[in-house]
Length: 150
Image 1 (cartoon, helix red, strand yellow):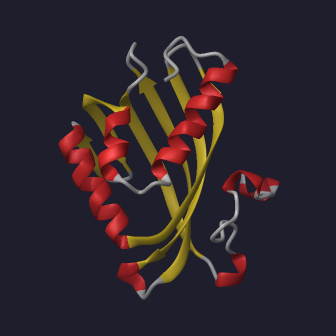
Image 2: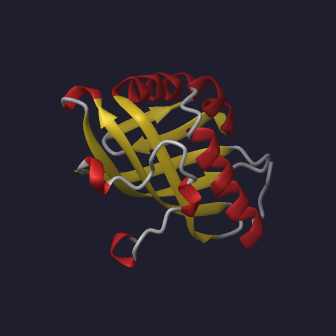
Image 3: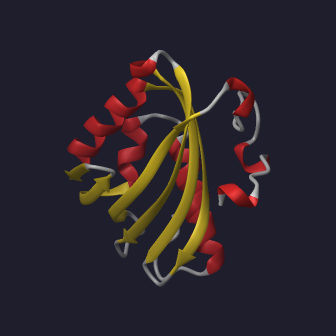
């Protein structure tokens, strides 16, 4: 696990490791990347600690079917990383419509490399089947995302 201070290479590795971990959609695995007292703001939800994070992720992935995520390094400092991301899912609470979330995250890390703070802002847009980028079996890292989406 990469630990602060980050270089461009270790920050990039941290981003892709987080992407791969979230794509498991396994809250039991994902929560272990965070400190026990980690602080989160995810849109309008304010969370603290692994138990609240686990509950949040469980609800999230019960709603978001066929979830596929891509994260890219936006910026970094010694112990902070900013990320741009996109994910697609079918919304169980909205007739299984396809949606894409565009967002940014701000991460702060403890000295052991676990995330101690995560702030996320994102916007969902409805998309058609034809507009999907991250289809089953496709490498999310290989998908060309045009400048208008960055």
